[in-house]
Image (tube, rainbow, N blue to C red; front, side):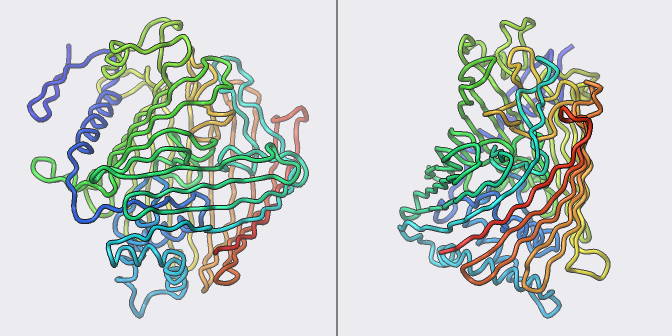
Length: 525
């Protein structure tokens, strides 16, 4: 029996794959079509992206959850102009009852994004190069790296370092690391934006120098095109993401999206707005399985209401040395027909849905993703290949507007991120591209946050990980840390982290206690 789906008078026939994955591919295809015909409204301006380690994201998340910003996408990074628009929106909702820390938050953002707010007002962007900031970091740790490839081909050729995740693939050597980072950005009128972030270690780091990101972007009508190296985060989760996160070293490739969400009318007006994104990149050449594989990713986000964002994503490692993809191979990929033998299987796909629903007093969100071979009855995929994460965010606790609470949990299966042909797994330069807990693992996470009157943020974090359950090694990590970000003056800011980790069966010793202490001092120009 085969199902038939009608879309714009075109009939698609499909068999042999889970209904879930096929629907995602249909959505993605439709999103790419929407991108191609996206209407142009007013002046189209591209601007540099905001690095994912910026405190801007904590502030924007807080403003959204409190109702000062209506709709917030779950794909990152944000552009500077996007942030400027949200700052203006939030300022329009400030009244006499607005807490002092919110007012301070908006003042800080207005100062940082003053040029971008001016661009919105005039519709014209200046051509300039700016040394945005310089940061000196000092970090000391004895935290080991846990090998996530203990189980052979069904594991991932990656490592996890407790207390150090979502750090653009950067691992600290034991001892003290002193490093410097500089963020440079520029624009050429309304049509070109670029940025570069070099980082250098003075001693005890894993690299003497590296490029955190470096890209240039332009637009064709309402479609933004970016080429180079930059971070990606897909999904609503805070602690990590099943699909794409900055746990890995940033991918080098091409990203195509719309500058703004496309308004939807007609039959599909219930979607309200849609924002498609497409990514192509080459993975690192240090893999042990297939050299130089391709990475493709497509995502579509819709916002049926101002407070709901639904995402669907499809990513795949495909091709590479000895696995040339023909037109017929691409056809089988799009129709979900995988080869039955290891030697001929030329792609490893991950697909799923995520949602974020913002209520007046809380946010609830989650992700459900599955491997490409998942099958089941109707739209129900096989539980053995499903991974999920979920969370809740309370932007205020009772009458205490300045306190907030976030709770998250998740679980991955024994096949998650693994593949019989691409047996290094869902990995780029030794780091998992999605959720750092990896294969066959569980997470529980809690964060209690506090904003002071000047919008300085303190977070108290607890995380419990059970890793590689299927190996029966009972590997566990209990991580506890405090982080703090503080604006010292208009030009200077500080970020600090102090944490301890209790490790069980993760190293040669049965039990170990690890620590990490880090301080970043940032000068903004």
